[in-house]
Image (cartoon, rainbow, N blue to C red):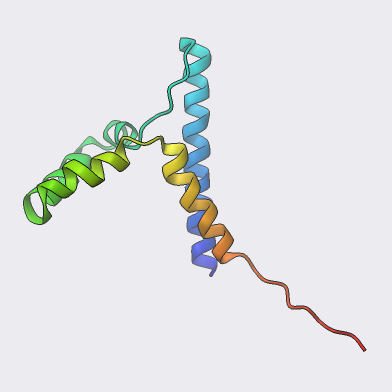
Length: 102
């Protein structure tokens, strides 16, 4: 459960960093446009983005990349990382044992 909590916090941190970047650009440019996962990924590591695209398209299914994965990559990073991060934190949270006293 500790590993799930750490992964959850890392996803939340990534979502908050993306939100901070979006707010910075909003102040700088004057319009708010959430950063898409695919845009951030291709900016941070274009080689791994191209490798993943080639690997999935050539060896698994081009339709999978074009329909499902591109749909996820077009979504805002805040939601793609934030929602799973919150779910992992909920799953990994410690449950208090209730003690009954007499």
